[in-house]
Amino acid sequence: MARDAAKRFADDFAEHASNGSGFMFMGSCGTGKNHLASAIAVDLMRRHHIVVMVSVMDLMARVRESYSGAVTEERLLADLCRPELLIIDEIGLQRDTLDERLWLTRIIDKRLQAKMPTGFITNLDTEGLKAMLGERAFDRLRDAVALRIKFNWPSHRGKGVDHAAA
Image (cartoon, rainbow, N blue to C red; front, side, top):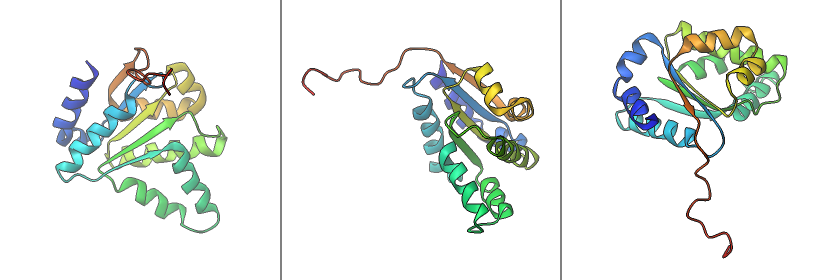
């Protein structure tokens, strides 16, 4: 069960932090990927770990800020390597440019080298993720994750809501 695996990831975080192994949540919209990743983040933060959760769109906006000199690329990379766990949400919703692929590869590389766990959340399947990231980033991403969960059940959004009354 996904919840049990996520709980084990949080409970065993010291081991994941020692070797830099993160997680990958893949599946359709509304299946609880973000919810479960947020639960991991909250659990770790309650135990005084530094966790940052950011959408890939916001991450790429920060990258674009670096082009104007608002922050240097080195500072941005240092900021992204600081959290004990960085969770990147919505992989696949970026503009899909070569520059974005290179930045994601660079972030994954830096965190792998620093042995810092990273969580990845996407609605893409394996082939879609591989096509979007490119072979190099996809290969590195596979090295960066110890826990892979496919959320292959129907969306839970809107359940229990009376749409006729809305």
